[in-house]
Amino acid sequence: MVQRAFITGLAGTTISRDEREFLREAAPWGLILFKRNVSDPSQLRALTADFRAICGRDHAPVLIDQEGGRVQRLAPPHWSAYPSGAAYDALYRREPALGRAAARLGARLIAADLVALGITVCCLPLADVPIAGADPVIGDRAYGDTPRQVAALASAVADGLRVGGVLPVLKHLPGHGRATTDSHERLPIVDADLRTLEATDFAAFMPLADLPLGMTAHVVYTALDPDLPATTSAVMIGRVIRDWIGFSGALMSDDISMGALSGSVAERARRALSAGCDLILHCNGNLPEMREVASACPPLAGAALERTEQALARRGKPDDIDLDEARTRFAALLAGRVGTVSA
Image (cartoon, rainbow, N blue to C red; front, side, top):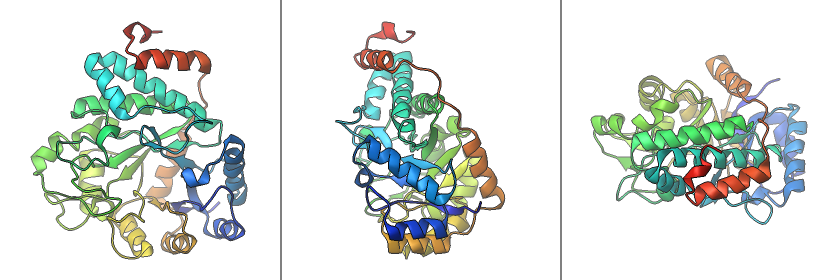
């Protein structure tokens, strides 16, 4: 069945008549959910099932940003609250094994929440390495401030999602931690030299290069491309993300409706695809924009189709887990009880 090279949002908690017609005609690769799409578990299960029925694909990907801390679309009272990356950072600094165990188990519990709702992809882990003076858009979402620690905790998070039956998305390639502005609002420009970038920002992503899905950063790195952000830069995608970092999975743009990018959403989509993105992510649920994006995105074919198919093939069934026991153990890990690491 034809799938076009984009991921779409929706406006609300149900799929409108116009949205149904759009989904049938446009055939997006996947759907991404936000708080505006969420009411309660039964509503969300119905929404994801409805999306797949309209698309005619039982395993059409449904994505969500469920990081913990400031960024979690599913929240109490229906779902558990999860800590930000900074909590795992603090535990890792005390005892690396404790930090890794907590990060992995937290992600495993997130996966359990998602699978029960028909959500199969989580936009985690971050491998961004923040620096002093950077914009707080990353801030406490980060797993630390050194490439080695960030990569270790990001790997644990990715593994927790994977064994829980959810595909991870590595973001924001090749690094958003040095940006001094929020790319949701303006285009960040990073002037660090290439040696610094390779030793810090880019280095954190290298141990994670085999993850199935990745997301670009709307950030300009003047040492490599003084004009274009990574999302629309063939230099950044080809030379850095694919070659230097070695990322081989399916690559999606960050949300192309964000303020960092210029031009119409159709123009943005075409530029990102031309630069080497496999998939365009459009999140805001604005139907006229959704139609523009769809018109700019061709059916998946060639290497992009192969990478997306390989990514989906890597999603397995969740492992067996006693959720009550796991949540008790997770609370103990967060409290720093080292003896629970091997439990």
